[in-house]
Amino acid sequence: MEIDTQRNIKKANYAILIISLIAVSAGLLGMIGITTKAYADADEKTRDLLFYLAWVGAATLAITLVMLAWIIMRWLRSRIQPGRKAQKTQHVSAWDEAGKRLPVPEMDDVLETPDEFAKEDLPGEIDDDEDEEENQSW
Image 1: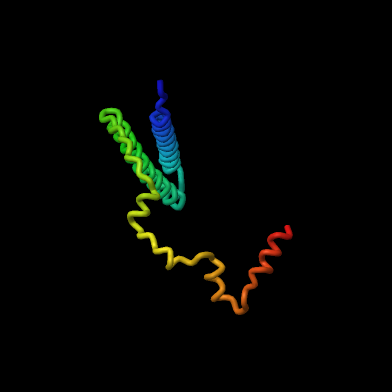
Image 2 (image 1 turned 90 degrees about the vertical axis):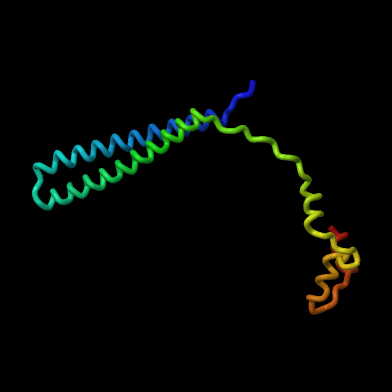
C-alpha cells in the first residue's frame, strides 16, 4: 500500500496556514478592542493616534479575513473536486533529440585538439615535446 505523502503535506500546510491566519485575526481583534477602550479615556493627541491604530488594525484584519476566506474556499474546492491524476510522459532520449535539432558538423571542419585552436592566439610557438616531458615527470 502506497502512502500519499504529497496529500498529507498539503493537508498540513492548509491546516498551519488556516490556524496562523485565525491567530493573527484574534490578535488584531484584541488590538482593536484595546484601542477602542483606551480611546474613551485618552486626550486629543492620543485619540488621534489610537484612531489611526484602530483603522490600520481593521484594514489588516480585513485583508487577513479575505485571505482566510480564499484559502478555505480553495481547500473546499480541492475536497469537492479531486485533482486529476497526472499521466506519465513518454521517455525521450535527450541525445537523439539534440541530434535532430542541431546538425552534426562534418569532421573536416572540426579541430582535432584544443591546442590547435589556441596556437593562433599565443605570441610564441608551442613546443609539444616540452609539454610531454613535464606531464611524464609526475
